[in-house]
Image 1 (cartoon, helix red, strand yellow):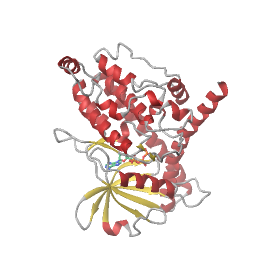
Image 2: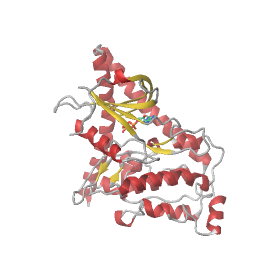
Image 3: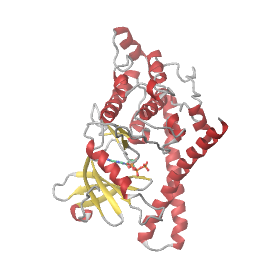
Image 4: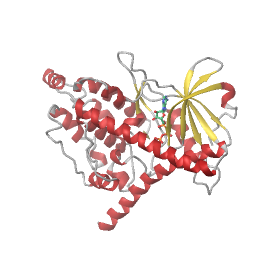
Amino acid sequence: MAHFKLDNVEDLYEIRQVLGSGHFGQVREVCERATGIVWAGKFLMLRRGAGSRLGLERASVEKEVEILQSLQHQNIMALHDVFESKAEVVLIVELIQGGELFDFIAEKESLTETDAIKFLKQILEGVNYMHSKHVGHFDLKPENIMMSDKQVPNPNIKIIDFGMAHCFLQGVEYRSTGGTPQYIAPEIINFEPLNTAADMWSIGVITYILLSGLSPFQGDTNEETLKNIVELKYEFEPHYFSQTSSMAKDFIQKLLVKEQSERMTAEECLIHPWIKPLTRTQLAKRNRSSINIKNFRMFNAKRKWKMSYNMVSACNRLCKLKLVCKSSALEKQDLRDCESDQEGTETKTSSLLRRRLSNSS
Ligand code: ATP
């Protein structure tokens, strides 16, 4: 059992403004009183009892902590300290000030593939490192790819949120149904044994979106999206990919592969000619090609709108609960309840589809 510090986090850190929130809690800026260093504090509500649906199991927080402790890489958010009280665990992590990569890109007038690759390469380096440590992230998506500081000329990519990550032990099978429909690999939907290749699928989806502003498998409903994934139903619509190089398409095609063992690994991606051109011609082609920034901006605006909508729905549900609940301790718990319900919907959707697909085959 992992040992977390039992001190009151507020004695050692000044708790400041909210930076973001997830299904099980908030992330806030915190300042270490002894040093004046500013960090981010991820406050995770713990489940109170075996029968409770609220909050996270301690074992799942321990898993996230142990994984973060095992990873030290410039493209992966660093863990500094961990505190525990009866009700929550607080992860003190590196403060990431540059926001999400996709928001940064959406502010650009134009972006060549070469520029986009500077970011993609860092994602691949972080992922290659974690895979070399037998860790799979299992929730790679634009929201979890942040930038250290967007004011500097070459900002660092930081991969965050290891809440769904898993460290593989030799000979031990692992299955999971969690994840975000647009980005999950077919083996997750089919509830097959997983390996780190699932992350490479998500990188294929992220790259596709980055280049075109389209989401390759997006359907009108989650069920339709998941069905498109298991049927590998996607194409490079010429209208959206007119500025895309053939090397970029080849890169994506080698990631959106159903068979896990045939999918490119992060190590292989880093030496794919699109990422690491071998000839001047390849380099020139890449420099001439650009991302579909206009459509990308539209995709990003819709994505942000959806995120705010989810947040507002959670708040509305909280307000309704407030009418019957006056205690501030309970209010905090209820917010997390609302948020964990959203995750439940996603997981239920995928397991529902899996059952349907297996019944029909
Ligand atoms: P989810 O419900 O998506 O699994 P979570 O509860 O695990 O989320 P995170 O995704 O880790 O929480 O963080 C939630 C949000 O907080 C992020 O989307 C981001 O905006 C912000 N955030 C997370 N970590 C940091 C950090 N180190 N520095 C600054 N902001 C952060």
